[in-house]
Image 1 (tube, rainbow, N blue to C red):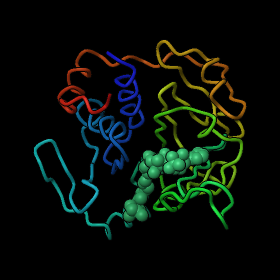
Image 2 (image 1 turned 135 degrees about the horizontal axis):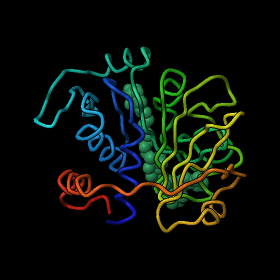
Image 3 (image 1 turned 120 degrees about the vertical axis):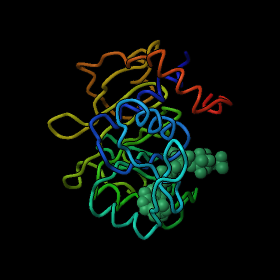
Length: 224
Ligand code: F8G
């Protein structure tokens, strides 16, 4: 077992208790996590192929074109896991641009679905390289809306070092667990703002059955 398998299981755990909702995992690790959840704890999860179909274990199981995705977004029965170029302590996310908005030093993806996602339904983030470049005191522009800008449901952040949530009185970021072998200091050293670390534990390791499933889902080990 390696660190990335722990990350995949932590992404699967994002969906615990979700029931029959649309899971929209962006990127390989969140996708493996959602598929693992579907095969274990959350068999009713619906997964889109990102174009027009719902995919099950045995192929296409439904039709969900873009137009319908917007209906699901507005209805709220969805949990998206997005990436983030920047995240602040209240979960404001930036995937749009770096630097001054009028003259960015880097133009990124634009705002995409981030504003609508965060105001309509549960949202989590996956950060493959936990660093002060990503975890900043203030994002350069807000794509996904955080907890200090009204009531929203930013659920968790999974990184290569740890799992974070927002279960604090003011909705700011809290350390839930560090992955096996990672220290709290390592997380703090790579985070650009103070973190509540009070009750942090250790992220669970995937079970042997889960490891087998992860290998089946990713036989070429692209996750590494
Ligand atoms: C930086 C930083 C930083 C990057 N500080 N510099 C530099 C300083 C870096 C590089 C350069 C590039 C519902 C819905 C939708 C839909 C539906 C509606 C969504 C219709 C679909 C379509 C739509 C959104 C989903 C994601 C994004 C997943 C990732 C990426 C990434 C990194 C964004 C994190 N902090 N950062 N730089 N999408 N993608 O040194 O400089 O900038 O950097 O939900 O769409 O519209 O709505 O991006 O950037 O969730 O997670 O990986 O491009 O890889 O290469 O790192 O090296 O070139 O000089 P990237 P990267 P240089 S939901």
